Image (cartoon, rainbow, N blue to C red; front, top):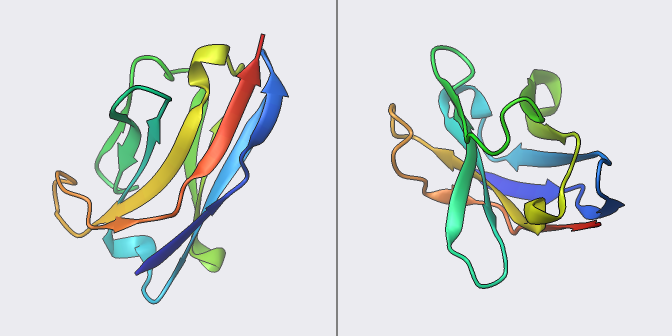
Length: 118
């Protein structure tokens, strides 16, 4: 599967963005899907991971603000990000895994920059 992330941009604190991850080459219905992010000078961290059926996990720092969704007809996964804060500034990556537990991700999108100003 190939992944194409989009939707990043620059917003002020408290604003919203919606990221999209469009898949091609295979259906995302059988994959674990995740969003990760990497801020300058920091390691990559998981934001949300789900198989949209039995398992969904959000990082504590985004709970209540970020929501992942799947658009089946478009084979696309979105990440709605509300109440963005400067600490959310990072490059965001979508990823997919064929591991039934979503423990290793083999397929990655190219990343999209999110910048939040105070």
